Image (cartoon, rainbow, N blue to C red; front, side):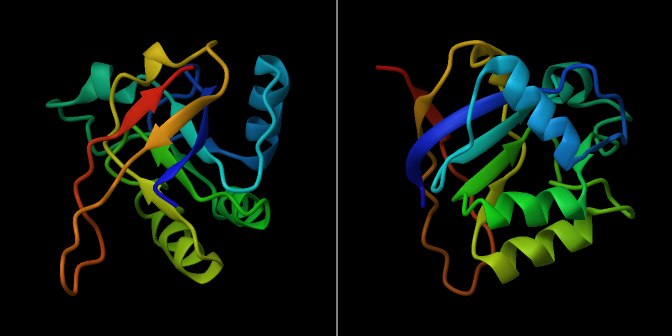
Length: 148
């Protein structure tokens, strides 16, 4: 679950508090000639981290819809990752996205950076080992992408 194949999809044109839908994900896959496979970690590049970290807009990032989370779960991914501080848009889809991850048995990574370095490079090995935190529901990770 934490040592998987990975892909990074380009959503640079999404703005603050915009939602990424299943249709958006399918179009991004088609544009990049990428297929999401069972067990993948799917990363969403929006450049939010570089543009907004440390600003008043940091909490206003792009996020996925609850329907997109359901779709990703049905594809049996291991995880997805975002540059923002939450996987959905707060007060719109964030709470539902968290529940869906738990119900369907996959996880997500938040606050990722340098995803711009992965765009256009194809598949890679993704590593994001969490710390064992007794009773915890999350953990810091050192996220790494390795290309063969």
